[in-house]
Image (cartoon, rainbow, N blue to C red; front, side, top):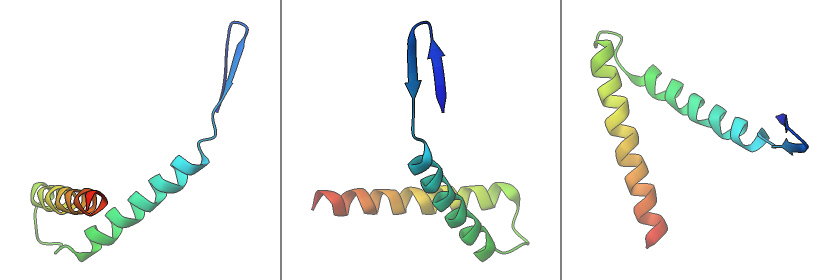
Length: 65
């Protein structure tokens, strides 16, 4: 991404962020595929939010130790 503001030009390399975003999307898709098609959208979102929150907390805890 390149932006020009007045006399300044700013160039950002977003390729690393794009790759990470794709990893996150792939993980979400994998988890969605594991859920029963019979559950409601609200229940699916709740399950995904809780699972990913606990995974995040576990990862942060292992970084500290």
